[in-house]
Structure formats: C-alpha cells, structure tokens
Image (cartoon, helix red, strand yellow):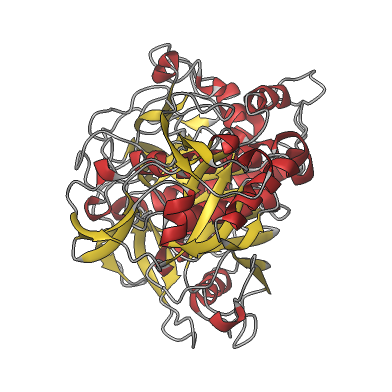
Amino acid sequence: MQIPFGSLSGRRLFRLCPVVVLSLALATAQAQWVSTHTKALSPLLKDASLIGPVDTSTPMHILVGLNVQNGAQIPVILKRMNTPGDPLFMTTYTPEQFVSQFSPSTAQVTLVENYLSSQGFQNLQVEPNRLLIQADGTASQVEAAFNTGISSFQVSGKTVFANTLDAQVPTALSGIVVAVLGLNNFEVLHTPLVKSTDPCTPPTCPPPSQPLANTSFTPWQYQIAYNAAYPTAGNVNANKLKQKVNPACNTPIGSIAEGDMGCMSGTTGCPPPDSAFTGNVSEIVVSGTPSAKSTGVLKDLYLYWHNYQLPLDPVSVVYTGKPSADTSGAVEWDLDSQTSTGIANEVLRYYFYVATSLTDSDIALTINKYASDGKAKLFSISLGECESFPYLDGFMITGDMAFAQAALQGQTTFASSDDNGSACPIAPTNGVPGSGPPDVSYPASSPYVIAVGATDLYTNANYTYDFELGAEFSGGGISAFETSPFWEATAVPSAAAGQRGLPDTAMCGEPNICGAIIYEGSDPKTGTGGAQTCCEGGTSLSSPLAMGAYARIEMAHSQKLGFAGPLIYQYSSGTAPGVGQTITGFNDVVAGPNGLYQATPGWDYVTGLGSWDILRLLYTFPSTYNH
C-alpha cells in the first residue's frame, strides 16, 4: 500500500558513512543513512544491458520532494468539506492556507537547502508550496549526497541512466525528504491515444459502419449526446444549438502538455529562446487569445473554435521548465484542449501547463505548479505509466501530495485510466486489452484524481444518447500501492481491503464508434499545415470530455462544488454492484469487458460509475449546493 504522507515506515538502516555538512544536526563526522521513497530501479532494468557507471561530471537536475505536515488530516478535512452542517461545508483552501497548515516548515526547508548547498548543488529553487526543491549538480554530487549509484544502460537501442541503489538521506532529514526525482530517464509517461483504424478527413468520411453508430463527433454532437444541448431537427451538423445547461463561461480549466506549443499570435506571444533560461528560472507564462496568426497547437485550437463557431477563449501557456522543441505529442494536446472546450462550449480561460519532457521528474514539477498556482478549477492529464515505476522512483508520493493540495483547494484533476484494459499500460500495445500483467496506470490511480475510462458511445440518428458499452481497452482494476479513499467505501469492491479501485467514471473513447473530429498539424513556427482530421480516441479523449462536461456542472453551481471525488460518489445513488439501485446522475454502462473485468450494473472496473449525464448530474446534487 502507498505509505501515508505522515510516515516513512519500513525503512532500512544502513552503514555509517562520512558526510560533510554545514548545518545544525547534520554537522557530524558520521551520519546514518535512511532510504527515501526513491528506490533502486534494478527490478525494472532486468531487460536492459548495463553499460557502466555514468561519467561523474554528467550534469543532473534533481527535484527533492519534501513531506507534508499533518497529512492524516487531509481526508478528514475533505470529508468535512462535503458534510452538510459542518463549518467547513462548501469551503475550500487557498494555496496560502494549504502552505500554512500542510507544507513543510521554513526551518525544514532551510535544513534541506543547507544540506544541498554543502554537497555542491547550485541553482536551488524552492517551489511556492515548499513541497519540491529544484537543484543542479553532477552525477558524483548526486551519488555522494544521496548515497546511491547512477549507471548507464542500453534499452531498445537507447542509452539511458538510472539509480541502482535507493536514494538515501542522513537521519537528520528523515521524515522531511521523501523522494529524490531526476535520478533516471529510463521511463517516460506515454499518451493513451488510440486512432481510428479507418481515418478520414471530413466531409469525405464514410457512413457509419455499425448500426446506431454515428462514428465521428463534432463538439456540438458531444453536447447533444451527453445531455447538455437539444438536437436540431433535420440538421445534426448545426453549428448553433439550444442549450439545456449553460456553457462553462466562468470555469477556468486546463491540461498538461509537453514540448513546443507554438506562438499565440504570429511571432509574438512565444516563449523566449533557450538562451533566456539561465540560472534560477521558475516558469514563464504566455497569455492571450489564439488567432489565425497563431502557430502550432494554439493555431489548431483557434481553427477548432473558429470553424465550429465556439467563443474564442483566453489561453495561458505556463512553461514550467526550459521549453523543448519536441512536437511528438502535439495531437494529444490538440485533442485535450479542443474536445474539453468543445463540450464545455465556453470557458473562462484555458491553461496549458507545459513540461520540458515526459520524464517523471518533469511531469512531477508541472503537476506541482498547477496545484501551487491554484488557478485552473479543473485539469486533465492524458498521460500514464504502469504504477510500479512511479511508486519506485518517488513520483507517486510527490504527485499524490500535489493532487491532495489541489483537492483541498477545490480543484478536480481528471486522468486517463489508460488503454490496455486491465493490463499494464505499456505504450507499444495501446488499445490491446490483456497485453501485459494486471496493473493500473498512474496518475489515474491516485486517490485524489478522477480516473476516466472509455466507452463505445452509441447514439440515435440525431446524436441523442442511446447506450454505451465499456470499451475493451478501458483501463481499470485494483491498485497495488494506493489506498482507497473514503468516498469509494460503499461502491468499490476493493475498498473493503483498503485498495483503490478505478476508473471512477468513463466517457466516449472508441475512435471507430464515437471518435473526435479535431484540427491538428499546424507548424509551431509558421502555422501552416493545420487540417481537420477524424477520428481520435482512447482515454485521451475520455478524460478531457469528462473535464469539459463537469465544467458546465461547476458553472451551474457557482464554482463552489469543490473536489469532485467525494461528491460524485456521495450523490451517485450507486452502492455495491448487485444491489440494483439506479445511478441517477450517470449513464450506467452494464456490458463490455476490458480483459479481467466486465462492465455490470452499478460501479465496475471498466467504467466506474458510468458516463456523465450533464443535465441529470447537475440536478442530482442537493439544493444545499448553489444552483
């Protein structure tokens, strides 16, 4: 099980080793070492060929994860925030309040900073919530400071590095430092994106290949299918629909991204060149509204909004580290931003939080930035990896603390449950259920995240909802490391054993049945090449659809609903499978396997509570929540 925030039980004690330090209790000739949550990655390197120790002068950028204080109080406070009559009911924390009650103390931070400085690290930077400290050093400094070893390996034709021993700290830092990220680039998170086996470019798409399946969806058609808008008689492609639920015009939402996002408008609104990133750089924010002169992902977003007659919303691009020229994930960032704002119809602002790479350390920093900012009310992450890796390298413990902060601040994070069904989500086999050992994906498995699985959505000819089946690739199962949150107790079978079960909910993901028509391919430098394409899917589609749908529900409740986890389970009307109760705010998905599991009436390991019925779910929440 995931070790609670407030403890580091089960640590091993190691031999005494000399350490030179400059501060307080660390000023001793001999220090006893204690392991952090960053473990030796040797078990995951069995298929890799050892090259040897890395060059001692190899530069390394690390993140030192610090423990929260009063961690056991986080679920208690979340429960009070969802209990009518409690003084905390319908309240949320500000980032400042979180820091005051839960962040490590300034004295603890100073202790860690002094230790890092004494070991030769430079460019120390403490994140605003004090949960992470960035630092630059060499491989030899990392090995000495954390009593570990860094070696090079050959894996699938690539040379990578990884720590072969646990990352440890002197006992004076025990309970303060919980992880050290950046000690490997062996594994990166992947995008759970599934493309249609019969791609086409509208309007030349073939007619539906299956009965009741409309095959491809515009934003308006997703709005109809999930009960946010009325269909238009005789014209299912109409660009203006009568709305059942107000657009999410006051709800700020966002997603994680990586690489080159392009320019906001022509050559302006771009991130500065790499040479601008010297020394102690925190982040840069590029803000504005995409236009016809924009480039890259931002141009694609403009084309989607403009051609579907959606409002042109303000956008902020927050680069959380040195910008990268990588564009390999551009289709994913296109899908996230376009489909979420499309089903929402309008948002207050869209935030891209952009990582330098998809390594655990860069993604952990980006997630932490999103939480410490507290600006995006809803956030979608279409990334994942087999959860054993983030558990071993420390990403899980640091990510969970950031997600917990966001939850207390009333933010809801949605994450794709991945596309290998009940199996380990290994990128080359996306969409193939059972193509690996049973496992679930992180960050979807975090208890402070809404894990979103996938469905096959079938609609009537006018795109109104008919039924859904669980998609065979829909990620779901039981976490081996994360504990079950209190809100799962009456619905999820694994909760009785204290194990987190997922997904929590599901939305359309099958590209051959309900795939998204999006714009993609704009050059990040020139803006040329953007085109309308069909059909994109996977849980990469499901997660942003769930976020965009929930943005309308938040809008209808004056942005006061808080973290969605306890709320959707408390008012879903669903209990353990087999009881026969109707889940009133969800479209219950009752059939469809994902390998080990089968969709059934009630909650299941393929589709969770089911898919959102936007109008019904809005009114499922009691009148004590503002309408």
